Image 1 (cartoon, helix red, strand yellow):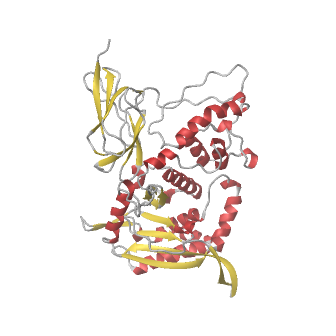
Image 2 (cartoon, rainbow, N blue to C red):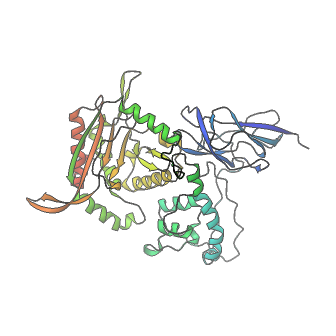
Image 3 (cartoon, helix red, strand yellow):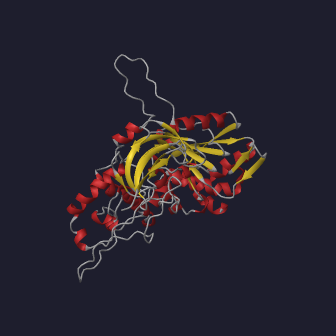
Length: 466
């Protein structure tokens, strides 16, 4: 009979030298039996909420910290009783093999490493009620929690009866398949309402529970930035400043008082861009993709940067150098229940419009769900903030620390505008560009804004800049 031992799990460094994290919620309790890489807790760093997978397989014997407690990296948070040869370390305490994941650690699962695919059959497609009964429950559960850091292999399905033929793969687009995967929905159980049976995002959402998925009550309860309801008679309410809100505040103060900001504005007729957007949405090539003005402006920014690389740079104060980036990690400011975050799309300059559309959709969906990984919140080179979605025309955005420029998109409004020597009702937008005057001269910032405006006023101009 194998001997047992007690193993402590200490809070790991969740990335970029973060020194502490807050326990948001435990997913296990004392006495629970856990498997290797099972999610045991949600913790909030200064940048994001992440899930902690268990490095051991065993029984939970103690939870050392309560939800809401801020814990320093390296302190014990949970203890396990494990078999001498059944955990991530054997009796000799030899470490298990590790593999990168959401929080930077985790034991390698046994097996081939490639999840087995479920066999699909006509019988499964012909029984949507049965499929719904098995898919909805995990879908709702996953909609209320961030994505699992390490996804275990699926159990292979039983062989199909002789003569059976696999059903045709459900027709959908990459963003829709990503959404279905996050929500735990089998697309084979959904009937698509799009062209020729294409499964849309709304089809997936409606299958889970209808329309826009609400924020789970558990998520709101763990959100320390949501002000509690005031008690009757109280004249003020105090909410602790921590987590994402604390980090954002410190970063914005540092940026505002370190980099000399300059903001320039350009108001222009974007009717041609909006007309192009309408044609793309109606195009079969973009069916199922989420296209917005932000999509086209993002692409225009990436094109304009090719002739104005000084806006894609960083001021290195310690070494007294200007660091010029030869790639673009495009940051997109996202308002979340926990505060403002700016995740970025890595190597966005290498993406096609279709790829950029998919990346933007996944980025915003992930941010709003509170699932953004710490790695996606660092390394940005230039950012965009879309204040137009709130009906705002212009602003003076503060630079994301370490970046030379940030662009704010205003609302697209129908306004009287000079067009072909006459006054016509046109679609007008204001662009607000803030830049670091140590890196970007007024002329450089103005010419970038001018070129960007030229693309949006006449998308065909992009051909001359590629």
